[in-house]
Amino acid sequence: MRLAAFDEMLPEVSGLRKPYSAYDRWLKEQDPARLTEKMQDAERVFRKTGITFAVYGEQEASERLIPFDIVPRIISGNEWRRLTQGIEQRVQALNAFLDDIYHRQEILRAGRVPKELIARNEAFLPEMIGVRPPAGVYTHIIGVDIVRISENEFYVLEDNARTPSGVSYMLENRETMMQLFPELFQQIKVRPVENYPQLLRQSLAAVRPQSTKGTPTIAVLTPGSYNSAYFEHAFLADQMGVQLVEGQDLRVVDGHVAMRTTEGYKQIDVLYRRVDDSFLDPLTFRPDSALGVPGIMDVYRAGNITIANAPGTGIADDKAIYSYMPEIVEFYTGRKAILGNIPTWRCSEPDSLKYVLEHLDELVIKEVHGSGGYGMLVGPAATKKECQDFSRKLQAKPSNYIAQPTLALSTCPILTEKGLSPRHVDLRPYVLVSDRIQIVPGGLTRVALKEGSLVVNSSQGGGTKDTWVLDD
Image (tube, rainbow, N blue to C red; front, side, top):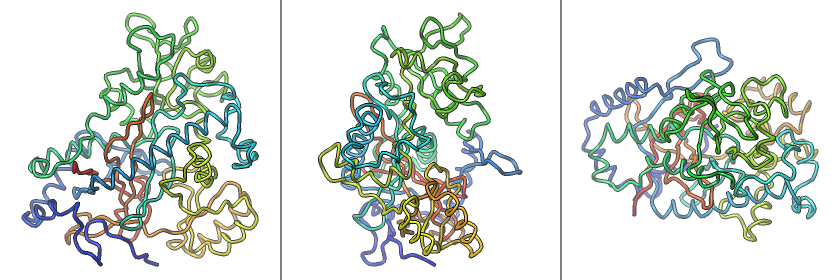
């Protein structure tokens, strides 16, 4: 089954879209052999830089080079302004929701979100009840996944409020494009993204604990070199000019978290953690965890360290909660959501489950806590046996799944051996929250490199593109 998709560069109905006009003029002047050469150059750059990701559960080499396409995705300034308004509104609502859920729970009392959806949710941390993070910010770094289905229709696919990854690819994609095609950036005014690490550091510093004296000490906490996103952890620490630490480098000293240095232990004020909640503190969560810091939650509750993102933020990007986002946005902002949700069936509800089971071959089924494209079924692309197997999973644990219609995601061209060819894309803009909200112009465009595929995740064979927001 093939869905008719809106092509962002060359729609069938209207022809070449204006944001691509200058790029198209340049492209027509290029020798195809030179472009193929540039694709190979890009691969060499990525290999030399070590831009890889790990694929779990596979026997072959775990490290892979992330595929990169040299045809940029181009967004006009007007389109970007509309998107940022919707993203800002959504991020404000997410932070208000988290504060409410861990304090007064007014949205539950108002019946806008079912109590059982929170109480029985493994992403909800009772340990965070009554705890308010420094500066009142829960989600300091958010990745909002957005899909487009027509000229003016954008939808939020999901909210990544725990430890969103991929920003290093956004930065490396831009740097690589500027190396390969410097003349393009002289001809076309593209808004910069390369100041993201400085913005991230400033944003983290702005949410330091009240007790911090002088310039706050910031560190990035990584699970270690075997983690799939380790390249990014090391990259961001280096770009921000802060320490990259593991749990074994940290300990609690005099009511603060401190890191080991050549001159003894030094207090940390802000910890950008890339470790999941359950591994953060073996005294509070999983006792077998060697990745976290024993006692860090006591320090956190005392207000002596900022953890970004805050523990317990996973409840905000749970896919069952996602289905209530229109209500959540309206409840906390007093306005209808600017960016819509994709219609969602909650399989925990008997009527929804019945519908989903009867239409498996038409829908996309996802685990409520899933990520990376794992544990999902794309009905139109699945075999009869895969649908039957998934049906059994659904019936065994319906509350573990949601379902959505199979959307015709917009396409952008990629460079193939035969020339340009359309492929489905999504977009992950990165949002920084402190005393203000900052959105880097563009974000990470993920592209399904396999023709007809709707799965853009790199772990499932997808690649990335540079995303240009025009300065118009």
